[in-house]
Length: 326
Image 1 (tube, one colour):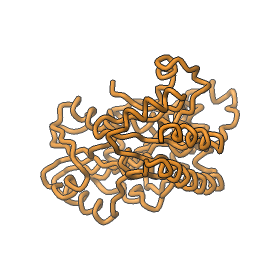
Image 2: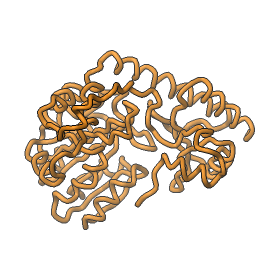
Image 3: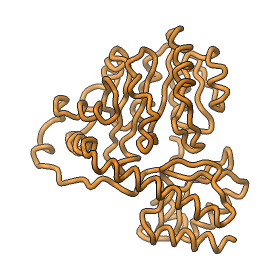
């Protein structure tokens, strides 16, 4: 399997520092988590029920005409390539590597290219996969450019797949409302914004026919009953959504300022993380790890992604650690 952030236990073993002593900045998961309530015993005892109101709550939250709950957007990333015959697929690079991996594993011809190249050369592909905002590069795209790309692909039976895992802090930029169009597939992940990655909950917004095919591919009970229960409540907590978005934007700006004070001005960033591209990335990653601070290292291109500290103590600890590297 491919490498991902969040492997804190392995880092604890490698560096000889107990897990509870780490500041884990290796993921883009918000530390400002939705307060999950106790789950009623009856929810644990029954099979998951598709008529429990989750789909309706998700459609209202995402502004999508229809969608399918899935076991994290990763489930859809792995299943979507199985719904097409051999295709020419362009995937954004650098980006979340599971996209290209899944399409290649399913036998498709895959090219990984910068987003600007993909958009300019859309006619060469049957499927284009973008991440908006991108992870880790944080690229953002004009709505008109994305819809023009979709039209080019859809005219030949192609797909535009847009992974919006980090879109929740800027919901006005989402394409979920347009996902009723044939050939447009939008992936959403609940773990990042709600701080509930362990729930493994995501959603796919797309044309009904594609959702039906994806539902058949994935089979029944894609989400557990407790996950469905918690996500329905989280998606409906409008006051918390507003508070969380404000917190994320403040924390991200603060993180960028901390990094900039130590000659590590971010190359790019989103509300969930800051990304620093530099040849010194691996050395800084190791130096911070020796102090119990875990970042996400990328080797191509050499770069670090910093997630958000949860509180003032976390920000001060990062600031102090970076001071030792100056």
